Image (cartoon, rainbow, N blue to C red; front, side, top):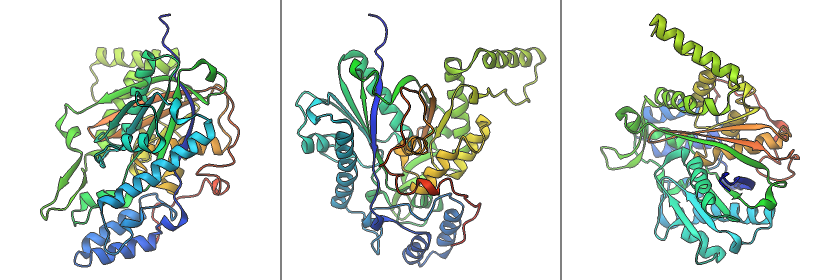
Length: 416
């Protein structure tokens, strides 16, 4: 009776934009050249960032941002939210056969767009869900909010037996396109693209065979007490009154420190005893010899996991986490390909990566998956899933029409 209830991931659905939303490199460069006519240096900076970003030619942005000039309108932002969220929900209900009235818990995370009525209220109204549904709308929590939502759903499911929970992770871009000239605030315009995920979780025993995954561990790390970590990603206004998200030059080292703290907490839960022994031995030896300058021993997490889903925040983020965890290019393939095909889709990027692994037919029963989400605050969160059954290569989904051409070679610099 005291044993925690198992949290099953029954299935999930991802948003895929129509081809009309795609923005090629040439189109993006021409668009920024016109909008930044009086700021050639800022335009050249954006072009260089795009060339090194790791994004491909098929990423998508909403129509309102492709207008000339861009139109960050409140009504158009709600239209984007409805299109994206309802598409994910319709697909999820179709795949799982769950009726909207059977949903007991609804959690939605979207960092920068938080309207009234809330986005969860919008979903409840659309699908006429029950009046006693437990709904939560999370905002301002950055790209790591997807795993925060999973953690919240897990905790609620522990107290409510025989329940279903849906977690929706997305980012609405229409109202958050930066129209100024500050370089640190122009970066998100290059990296962020449309994307979203709807995930069905449950603690019902009937899913113990059919669910795709079981949640093994979820560890959250918050570095907000440190000023540099707190300020490295922030929403601000520039000197001309334009609002945007500012990315500090400290972002990559801060992410590395947050990851170190997080893996020190999750390591004892997942690593084999040999790796734990080597780490403890290194700590004791360093204390005895007082050799503070030496690099810490990094456990071999490849012995604990078969698959890795690292937040596709950008090429530099993936490179840093790959180096910190001593991973091979094969282990970060899903992250690089998700960034190339869909861009930085914020908190939903981890699910595009998981979908890539499934589309490649690599997910077998018993395989362990490590999802690593990082975001403003600064936060680093980890979720460990265990595959509950061998997953057949899906015939639909966001990768269905392009999986055969992946992985692709991504050059260091793409000529525009």
